[in-house]
Length: 491
Ligand code: FRU
Image (cartoon, rainbow, N blue to C red; front, side):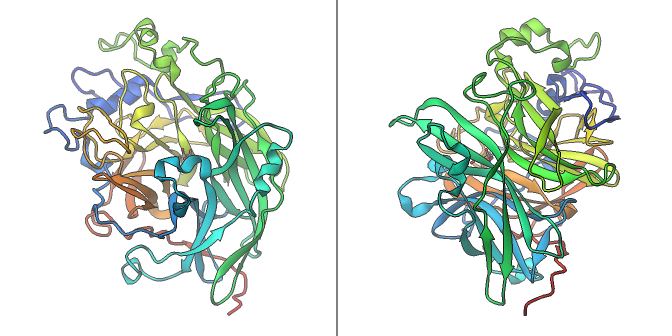
């Protein structure tokens, strides 16, 4: 590796595997993340894409169709088993989405405190080009009986609750029992929307049953909500340490190398009091004598220590997946980025990939990258993970001009690429297919599912498959099952 003139070299990561319950945490370092800037073209005309095209999602047309007129839709997940295979049930594909009522008088940016998990279904086994343009999903309603998730917050003070992201496990493909893992949220806010006390985020389990007949899919259960994990302030930052802590998005899986053991990855932050200036030389990750290295003091003086994302790991202590224990974080991003969201473990050809989503606006001072998917590869679930693609971590970004200020999804910088916020909350599915939601395309808000794209993934590199779909864009909300339940069909 020779590196890019004017930029440091990325950190050396061995991909070596460690015991899952060990205390090795891989670092996504500043030296790694700076490879994104190194690969960005400093002289594109303002508002173009400055990043390598094979790492960028093709532009979504501004005349995209919407999935449903009545609900905003964002983070979306599928019905998976312990190996993340995606199941259809009795001939139906099913997806779970964060939803918010469009008719309740609030806009897409107010969705977070009103989020409820809804579900959609459609017949399995139909090619994307034979479905309606919006993917043909039928809205099935909300999953959790109104208010049932509030039992987790009994005896605490809150003003509004929300259901945030997670995952859905089909516990046995011969059966209809499902386990929802999600983030139960309670906010305690004043009339102007300011937190009186920090939000409570609780990783929660709720059991239910899926049903289907010839005409529709429905669910029962989800009446009992079992709190599984609250951040402990020791391995994972809590609200007392940082009112803006991130703790959410559980994804469970079994490691083929540890059969019968269930693990969970989730979004967290490095424990400790917010604002303590304590990133280390290891967090920076420069090689000895790199002429482009920053000093620890320079980085601390920039205020970069406010951003300390961590990808968490927990292990199940019972077979019903109702008791979990924290393990040391798998990856930290201290002084690099504050959010590594919706992490997932993707196991392919003996390699362990962690994919996660992050934002341009959550990067620390001095480092930069687009909204989208980031990826890390190692030889086991706990590894000295190597950031993919030039050692940078970037896998699938929105078209972005890194030479221009970010702006926001609701208040665009007119100099920025009008698709810099086109999509978010990507989830990598079997076969490298990636689903996500549309946020803003040319100032038109989405709240609906993006066209699916396809990644080629090989060793530590990935590329968008431009032969897939229409110039790389597949069907809107095309989220196909790759497995079928063995439950005898009722029709
Ligand atoms: C990602 C995310 C998730 C969270 C949800 C809340 O889009 O930030 O981490 O569960 O949105 O709306």
